[in-house]
Amino acid sequence: MLNVLGKIALVIFIVEGLIMLTLANFGALIPHDWLPLVDAGFLSLLSFFPIFFWVIRPFVLAREAAHVALVNESAEKAAIVDTVIEGIISIDDKGMIRTFNSAAEKIFGYAKDDVIGQSVNMLMIEDDSRQHDGYMSKYSKTGVTNIMGVGRDLCGKRKDNTEFPMHLAISKMKVSGKRMFVGVMRDLTEEKRTTKLLQQQVEELEQQRKEVEKASNERVKAMGKLLLAKHEIEEKQALLQKIMDNTGHGIVVFNRDLRLMAWNATFSRLMDLSDEGYCEGMTINDFFQLNMQDDDQYNQTIEEYVEDLRRKIKNRSKKNEFSHDRVRPDGTIINAVQIIMRDGIVINTYRDVTAERKEEERIKIMALRDGLTGLANRRAFNAQLDKMIDKYTQDDMPFILAYIDLDNFKAVNDTHGHTVGDDVLKFVAKTIRKYTRKTDIAIRFGGDEFAIIFTEIDTIDLAVDRLTKIISDIKNKKSINGTPLDIGASAGLACCPSDGKDVPTLMEVADKALYVAKEKGKGQVFYDGAS
Image 1 (cartoon, rainbow, N blue to C red):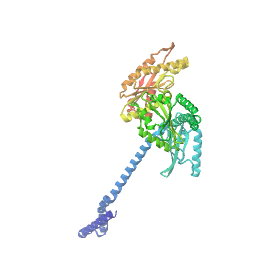
Image 2: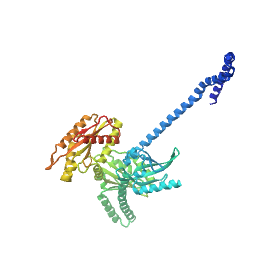
Image 3: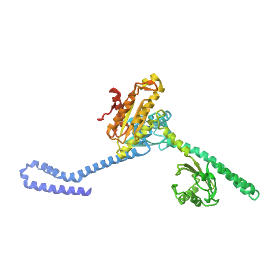
Image 4: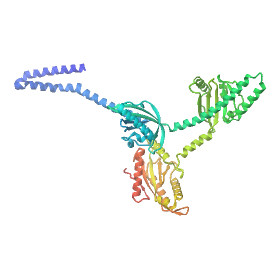
């Protein structure tokens, strides 16, 4: 700065000298009263350029660079917030929503534009809403709240009014002098379900542990009387082994030195192993070396497994029970539970959970299917549409969304009853399957509303052709099971990316197109290529 000021002073000195020299030679041409004004004017004019280039211009450029950096930083922060897996919502001191990231949209089912400016109470159940109002009222009056920085579990409410457990942590901040609150939330639905299942397994394993511990205590007591009752101990040991061999769980027990204490035949059967070579007192390394099979895939070497187990034994006061599923080459799923006793004894139990896991998977699939028609339901539709948007974003893969609505279906239910109506819906679903490809996704929303996602397609012609055939077959269906029919169907289309690159926009375009198709006389396919 001093260097710049020195340059400016030097320029002003030189300029003033030149002006004085000029006036001395040509001053007679200028009225005497004007000389000070001429001097000042030339000095200002000639001094402006160095001041502009050395002071004003660097200052303006620095301000512009700072503004660009600030804008880039804000955009970067907004992008980061929009990609985290936790929902992030900010509200003002009146409880009105100001920001709503993408994860929050997925958690609650609302689009950002639906909630901005609305009360945050719309995302809570009634009890939590009243409690929240109390917190905000207390904060407004006293400036003190007991919820800042404290995570808590509560019940949220989605757009479809379903309730779900979530974890919420709130912090406060000031933006442009205004108080704001930021909530970070996580959907606990899957976590709660998993915890419940794990708790059931823990209780079952605890019972097993007690039984094994009881048997072990009996064995220890019997050994203390070895000299007096050797024959009796041998009988008890044989009985214990028989019990272990006939239990449905595979059991392997190692002592604190990781040497084999006991095992049962169920373990060998579950793991498809031969127990030849097993002997009490053998090291855990030798034991697992016998169990290694070329076609099995292992996440660890034996050395890594043993090192990890020693670490678990050392830290058993913090956690002493571990569980994981392992899929064998034949597809069998084995649940392995490892319990580390207080004295360092390690008990491994193994259980075939193939049927349980398949049933869990079947239940998951059923939750995504319409019970009447077997088509995907609305929940599956939302998930598939999100996947298609992601696939377009990543692989530039276009697709087409079609909405289908039956015409005159209400009259069928009113005249012939819901049984005939159900038969009609099944026929429509069968017709849709007939004209859709394996890669396409057919959906029943509910009632007489259907949809199709035509995948890997960039021309409207194929979709229009398939929908026209579907509508024709439905219209030509004049009876079902002897009952006369007079039904039809209409369809509206939306294309990604030409009509939109996000779920709400595509759904809105398809819905509007369906409305136009019905307004134009029903029984037709409508697509507004200009949308």
